[in-house]
Image 1 (cartoon, rainbow, N blue to C red):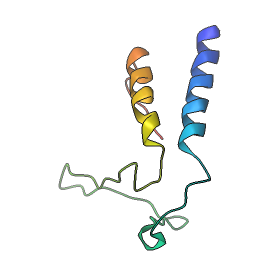
Image 2: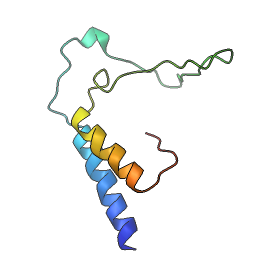
Image 3: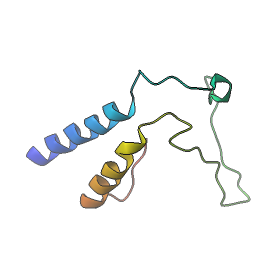
Image 4: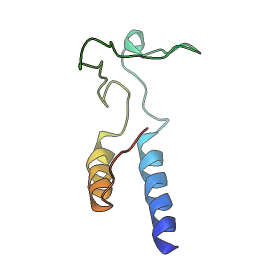
Length: 81
């Protein structure tokens, strides 16, 4: 039970740390916009998928390594955001 609570608290902290409101984009024209109902589907004839960096998403890059460490420690096979 304590493990589940610790996992929920840790993931919540990572998500909260990565979603700060005080950072403004320097160039709003480069903002990635996804319209309602618009999804990304990778091409079927290649293994190459479009990627977006954490910086492009304005995510907290300092929280990335603690998340990777946590997932490795818990022997996580998959993680989706």
